[in-house]
Length: 425
Length: 209
Image (cartoon, rainbow over all chains, first blue to last red; front, side, top):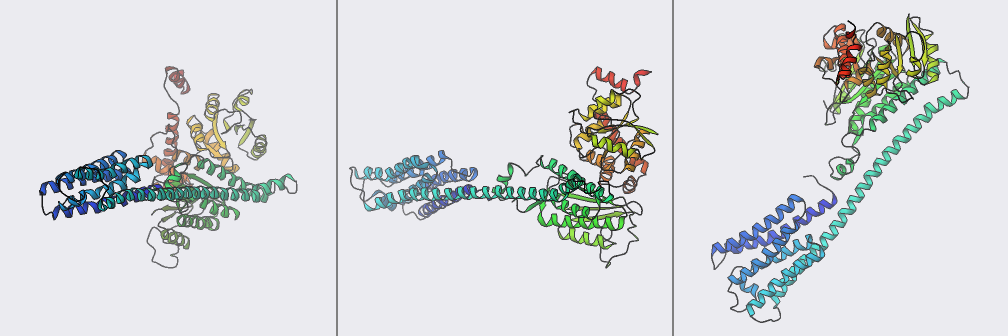
């Protein structure tokens, strides 16, 4: 089971605490039944079985649902808190004899049944709310008093033993009520703080991305358009046209990426809060592959390479993986720029399954090379087919492998080069 | 000499293409209009190939524009600034013979127009990508080999490199890509009613026996 929200954790703690309390009372019951000095074994174990059954139903449903079911709390209060102690008194001899009922029941080996009232009131105080909790506790307090009355035949002041018992029943309920109130408040505060932190983080990330776009637009498109509009330069000059083409490519990808963002995949949108609250995934760990690759593309474009980039359902991956993919793409684009003899590269990034797997390709239509004839790099340790050959392939391969991915380079003379990156391997 | 018309709602781009095509000795621009309505209202024979902007400001749908131009007797090359994949797929399913983004070189554009005028399909990495990752309701069933070729071509490989990786000839690779287009165009021509069927028979020229 997942760790859960602060509220769920508080609930689970209270279930566990009251269950342990009840467990301690049942242990006393088992000991009393095993070491009984008089009475029938069948009756002793039978009473024990009733108490165990009621406890099991109460705590099994609470565990399954995450919280107490009111009806089983009431059942437990009436059955184990009221009926069983009265049965004990009846078995111990009813209205004859001396001494307080609990002590007489104790002497007969059934005293432990009175203890159950304490753990019943703990569950009632936790689960039933103030008004109904008080009613249940009242019932549990009335039981020993009624037993007293039954035994003595007339009303008298409760003896110290009964008072001790009454005190423990009331204190259990009050203490559990206070604990629960405190834990629930802390849990809710924690949940609110987590939700606030998550939304602030998302807000910050969006803000940072917007700022980055604004900066990029300011430095590029806006500056270029302003310069052209002012008539300071010849808009037809090759450098200006090249710059315009580069910036148009940037805008084009920006539009494409925004289009994709408008169609949120699983794990984004309204689900994000619950996912983070259950602790299965936090927004801080996973980063967008697209954003990381865009960095690589932008820097390659600044060096004069035209990049046609297409993205489809690109997942978010752990930060180091995105960094490794981006570094490998940078390396591959550098290689296109230096060796392919063409100013144009194609980049694609696609999600390849529901579990966050990603495939990135960098392709050019340039000179290519013969993989078999390429120099063997710095050593012969590279496995065949994946990273034999140039330093480029070695550096890409090593980097990807360190992040748990793999790479493949394919080329032939005159047919360009294709670098494929996959994560996970 | 291939006659070409242009439908684009951006006047600057129309003027730009006019001066651009002046440098292409195999193409002759005969008309440049902001809408399909305006182009079809012109007198004279239709151009062999129409360059059609994917998104026009008159709210017409690309697939309707393609069908009307095809019905008028032109072949259609769809162009756009941004590769809007859903629209690209519908436009080609409606009968366009190729797709290019506007940032390609004059050489690429000329080559695409010549291919289309000759009855072929102007494939591009952008179009292949749009097909390969199409999740629309009309997506036809593609054979594993078709998908393999499509994915490689979509990654930017040349047709030759795509063919080498698949262990087939260039012609076979091209045939697979053409098959994908045919499948989309078959899926794009619903034959739900008898009227539709009759119209399709007419379109296919089967009614003229």
